[in-house]
Length: 152
Ligand code: SF4
Image (cartoon, rainbow, N blue to C red; front, side, top):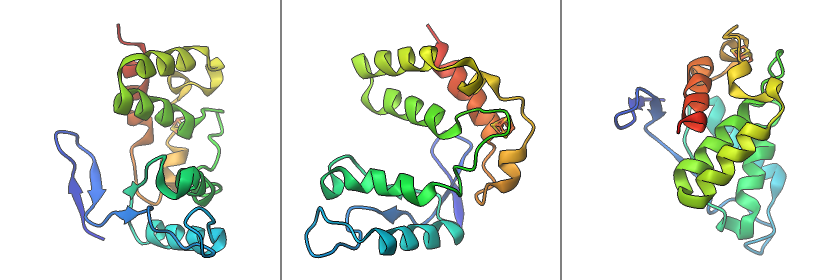
C-alpha cells in the first residue's frame, strides 16, 4: 500500500481509503452482515489501509459500531499501562470534528477520565507501536491529544 503525507500533519495515510457506507448487509441497509463486513475491514487494514471513512448516519448508525468491533482485539490491544488509547483519540476527534459545545463536552469528558486511562499517563514504552500494523507513533500522538484536550 502506498502512503502519503496528510495535509500539514506529518502523518502517513494510505492512498486508498475504505468506505464504510456500503458494507455488506443481510438485505436491508440497516441490517449488517457483520462477519462479512468485519472480514472486509480487517483485510483492508492488514493490507495497509489506515483510513476508514464513516459517519454516524451510515447504515443507520451501525457502521461506526461495526468498525469498533472490527478493530477490537487488533488495533485495540490493551496498553500494559492502562492507557485507553482509542478512547483518547475518539474524544479528540469528536472535539475537532464538531467544535463548539461538543468540543467543550469532550474536553470535560477527558478531564474526568481516570488518570491511568488518560493520554498523559503514556510512558512512551512503545509496546503498542510494536504491535501497530500501520507503525503509527502512538506515544507522540497521545502527547498531542493531551496538549489539545487541556489547552485553554
Ligand atoms: S507507548 Fe504509551 S500507550 Fe503505547 S503501550 Fe506504551 S504506555 Fe501504553
